[in-house]
Amino acid sequence: MEIDKCISGKRIYETLEIAEEALVQHHIVNEYKAGEGPINVYKCQDCGRWHFTSKGKPNSIFDDNEVKLRIKNERRANYWERHLR
Image 1 (cartoon, rainbow, N blue to C red):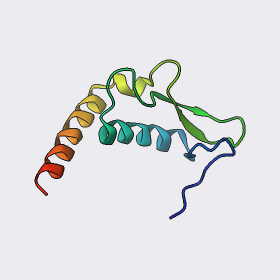
Image 2 (spheres, one colour):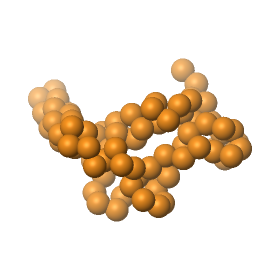
Image 3 (tube, rainbow, N blue to C red):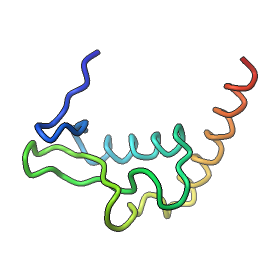
Image 4 (cartoon, helix red, strand yellow):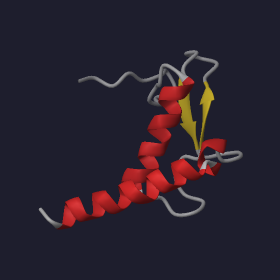
């Protein structure tokens, strides 16, 4: 499957909700440390779609306790899945 990209070369997400979910998934899979990786999303002026950014203020989605717990639990599940193969 081909991944759509903006003229900037960044991966595109069609909606804010999809971009925020992808951002959470990136933090689950990549296990970023504080200050690493993308921290928010923004609407691109070139393509009108959403991209990740590592600049600015972290997305408020990371303040949600349910999201924090989900990231923690899914990281743990991913860890055990990799180690039990």
